Image 1 (cartoon, rainbow, N blue to C red):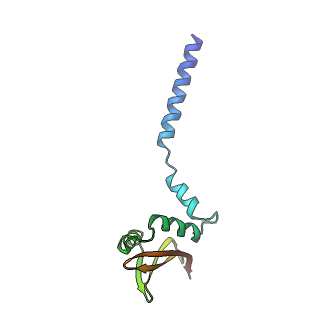
Image 2 (image 1 turned 180 degrees about the vertical axis):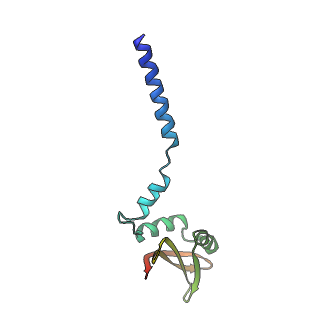
Image 3 (image 1 turned 45 degrees about the horizontal axis):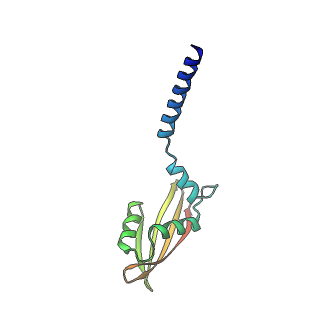
Length: 122
């Protein structure tokens, strides 16, 4: 009889652990740890690599502009076939962290993409 109750307890524990594992979602934490340093500052190299992979050379510029706009930012054309895009990653009273993205344009498409991290404060 004791063996049966231990088996039931084991099955119940397994079921609870399985359900807990199914409910866990670390997506945002993994993305944050990949793109930001331990002190919370944006990692420009990581952002450059990630955005270059998501929007490789040849991607239509309007697709990238929609991405920037969806994240509360804006893009502006600059001289010399360049596009400058900016958006805030964190805004606090009297402080904001910003990403500046410089894109070289090639026939209406992304050529190269470079991210610089910075901020504004009072």
